[in-house]
Every structure is written in C-alpha cells, then in structure tokens.
Length: 468
View (cartoon, one colour):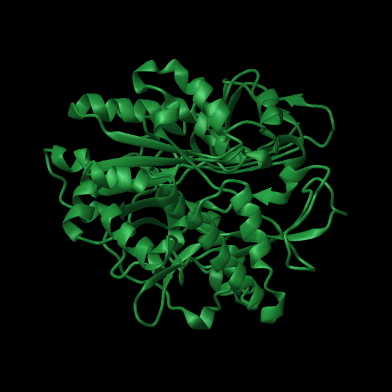
C-alpha cells in the first residue's frame, strides 16, 4: 500500500464533523497509517520472550492501616461501554442482574460507597460510557441520589469510522449512517481522558493515581495494599496479571521484548502459525486481567509527547459494514487495547494477583457460575470464589444452541440456580431445566437428546454422566 492510498483527510473531516476532538483524531490517524503501511498488528513468536518472574500480591506486606492520603489521590474508573450483544443483550451489559437480583452497576456503586464510608473520604469515581450505554446507565444510577448527577462522573468513549476494506476510504451507509461508526476499543481511555478535560481536571485536584477495570469484573475493586505498592514503586503503569489455566489459553498474554520491556499480545495479534506457542500456558504463563494502575502525571507527559494519544499497537478486525448481513461490504474496524499501553511506558510493571481479582462475565457459562453458590459476596461488595480452598471457578460448558443467550439461561433457571460450590466441571448438552435442589460435585455431564426441555430431578450429582 503506497502513500497515494492515504485517505486520512476524509476520515479527519468526518470525525471533526461528528464533534470528535483532536486526541481521538490523532489516535485514529496512528492506527490508520499503520493499516495502510501494511502493518497487520501481528506479533510473531520470534519477536518476543516469555515472562518468567514477577512480584506477587501474596508476597506483599499487608499493612494493618490504610494510608488515607493515597486514596484521596486516587480515582476509580470503570469501563462501561459494552452491550453484551454476544449474549443477546441490547442494553448496557452492566445492567444485567448477576447475583441476588443485583446488577453489575449495583455492585460497583456499593463497592464505592463501602470504601467512602469505611475511609470517611469522597473517593473519586468515573464511569466510561459509550453512546450505546450512556442514557440507560445514567437513568439507572438515579436510584443512588447520594452519588449526585450521573452526568457529573461520566467519561464518554469515542467512536471511529469503519474503513472500507477495498478502497481504504470511510465505509458508507447512507440509509443508516450509524453503521459507518464503531467503538475504538478500550485503548480509547487515554485520548478520551485528555480530550474530555477530565485528565487536566483530576490533576488540578491533585488526583495522582488511576485504577481502571472492566465493569463486568466484580472481583476488581480498589485494593489499598495494591495502591500502596503501586505508589511506593514509583512506576508509571502497573498491570494486574493472573496465572493462565487451560480455560485461558485463547486469551491474550503478557510477554516482553529483548530489551525487557513488557508488551501485551492479544489473540487477534498472533499469527496463525504461532497459535501453539500462544496457547502454551506453560510458556506464556500470565494474562492481563485488565485491572490497571496508572500515574496520571506520567500519562499526561506521555500524551503531550505524542500529540495527545498513545502509540498503541493496531488491532485490525475484519467485519461487515452491517454486522447483521454477511453479504454487506467488508470493512476494517481499527481498535486498540488499554493494556497495550504497558509497552508505551518506560519502567512499567506487572504483578501477579489471585483469581479473586478476576471474575468477569463474558458468556452465559460465566453468568451461571456467578449466580450460583460457587461465588459469594464479600463484606466490601466484591464477588469472589466461595471459601473452601478452591482457586478456580467450575469449568462450565453449556450447549450453545440452548444457552447462548441470557434469556435462554433464564428460562433454564426459572426453578432456581443449582449448587456449584463443589463442582469442578459441568457439561450440558441439550435443553436441561435446573432447580435450586440440584447439587453438582466433581465432574458432571448432563445430556438431553430431545428438542424438548427436560427437568433435572432434584438430588446430588457427583462425578457422573446422566441422560435425561
């Protein structure tokens, strides 16, 4: 691809017309130039090295008292731009009831309220919404009037144009112009903090530390011990990582360059020939939980150095202009990952945290586990694995034909949620109706070969396969 194929001015004009700020436009320009120069964003195995040794949370000295001055200098940001469309949701994913009738947002707000009450301070809090989640989220949060006007702690995610895969010009859909735009990935956090004015505002209020995590990860709350460690380290950036298991082998992992600088490699950045090494959890041992700590003053310096954005690696996703029509024209959606900023900061760090810090919901399998007694609510409103020595959640494999969507799962749980506290693995094939009187232990396989839903009789099922 030559320079004659650079149509960036068309994209810049389109973005300015949509009211997007210079940082967002410069960030997109960086991704677009990588695209037309032939960069695929792929990170070959021979260009990186495994990470073998990291500091660990369980080796930190936990202080009996909390340095309140550090919490006063901290802002908590929750990424709240996703809809959960893969599970059939059409509203903000964070509004999905996950446990005891409470939504992700209920838990997040209660985590913040708990910290504020316990420490007696007004901990700063921001929600990063998208155009798809802003309205419903703000309406929902009015049930918590003590938080104030939701619009006053909202950080809006940007949007970017889709790129026509053939012409490398802006994708066009005159009949539905909304289809011409897509989310830029959560790497947009950094330019959006700058262009919204939030970064300068927080720095002016002497807010020095930022803790950010996904709204669907209720294990991730502000931990005073980690905050103290991050502050004492004087690092500009710290990533919480966890040890990969077999169920994590398809997700991104931490690696390092020959120089020792960390980087993040997502599955979309791995050449197909290198997939065996990518999925080797003994070789690449750690994955990014997307719980990140950032020094805001160092972030400002780096943004200023690069003209308002961070030069994050390109993630090029091939999609159709209309995602509902396979015959629609092919487009590139250019995205960046928030965690990839670890490579941008000199002396960035990573720390191994327990799985209690990582309990996301990406599928209905995750949702079933979270709703069950395999997880419990802690005093500070986090959700973590129930006590009893377990370090891994139950491995759940539900038939996608009958459980892929939340409404399908809800139908199967109309008589209650089964006990999974002692379950190691649950495999379900066909439509099986559960109840609160089902108890699974060890490895259990359930099969219903008919198309009609079948109620599983009450009782304990231990290390067995049952046909209904």
